[in-house]
Image (tube, rainbow, N blue to C red; front, side, top):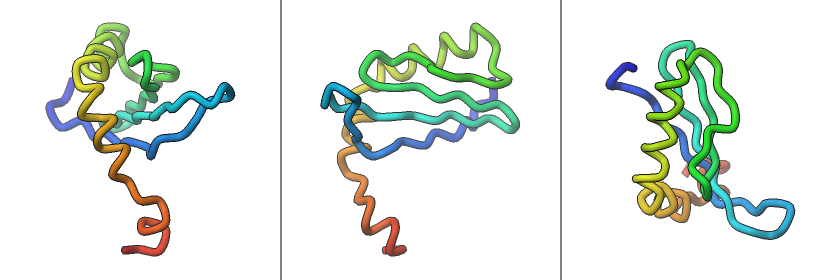
Length: 83
């Protein structure tokens, strides 16, 4: 896996039961994977090997608090308005 994997974190959303969740997308060239917190599981992947997916899941579990903190700071309207 490349050392410069791009990670994109969504704002906090809610699942069908009203529980908070955050989506995390990983990109490495043509490879893409999407994970979800809580759980720290990859829910879709294209191009990543099984071992790479396991590494991404481990990262999400280990960095859950940091990822959630990042998601909490996202201001959707400010981003939409280009601020």
